[in-house]
Length: 293
Image (cartoon, rainbow, N blue to C red; front, side, top):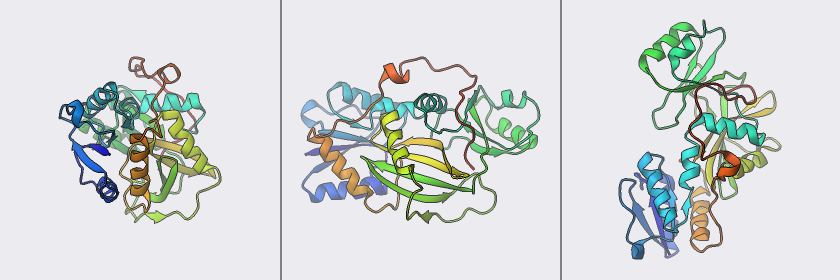
């Protein structure tokens, strides 16, 4: 079987380990860069793993899907998860415990609301490498970020009273991997990640439900423990999943199952999610209270 990696970084540890396992089993692994055209029909892979989020990568993924080739995750689901407003709205409709999220056209609009009275978290509305994710505790910090990120559409969330540690959960075709990671928003020196021996009751099922809601087979869920209650602060399509024993094997098995037609990749359902709507205007996207620490 030919299995394609749609990515600009085929040497990523997760992909490299997965490709090695597939090659050991006699499968051929082909790299397809996001800025390339689809291969000729005779050279198409039976399945493509989409480990890229650029506009070019999403367009290419959808072209492959239109040619009848399954892509994990779908271009629609991957693109949807890059908009933090639409993510929050869908999570709210699905009843997920997601951080309350308000959209603003830029940080100047936030400054126009008056003094910062309690710590906030501001993030770029559109998730991408090197985007804005910052803690704002006072007006001086807000002005500093506004000067650095002029015109950047943002979302604003309250800072939840967490421990300073995020539960990073990764799911590959129903297999859940996890670790504790010191939050990038926590004050002081960043500490090394910690292993997770056992997840709190119900968190595994919550992580699996996220994949059903967002139409994802390979994804990450960031969860805070807020007084014993889980609070989801982010969902990522096809994250790196570094250092998790068993993750490359799970991904290899998923690719083979999809290639053989034993598993149909998930995708968004526009009638349910509103995925075909125009981008929502700045305003507010209410959801359960809180955000990352």
